[in-house]
Length: 94
Image 1 (cartoon, rainbow, N blue to C red):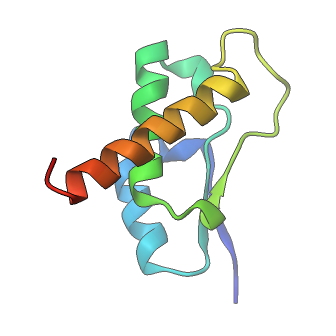
Image 2: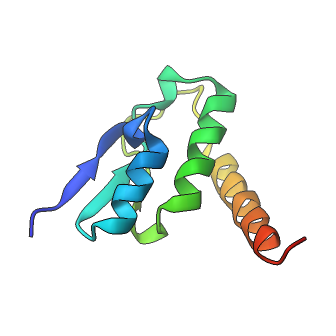
């Protein structure tokens, strides 16, 4: 089966990419190279959208050269943690 990798988080169609990834088992999402194109708030929104829809085993972190204005790995992990907690709370009706 051919594997498809949606590059650059399919920006600005991240939510649509998430839906494709849920439906097709041979599609994955790479979030690299989109960060220089969006603001910090945009970066956070993009990561949250992707984490809401894309299973972690189909989510690829960027492997490009590190650019100073990108979110650091720790910031990305914190954002992922907060997004995950918010999702659990909304499912519990809080």
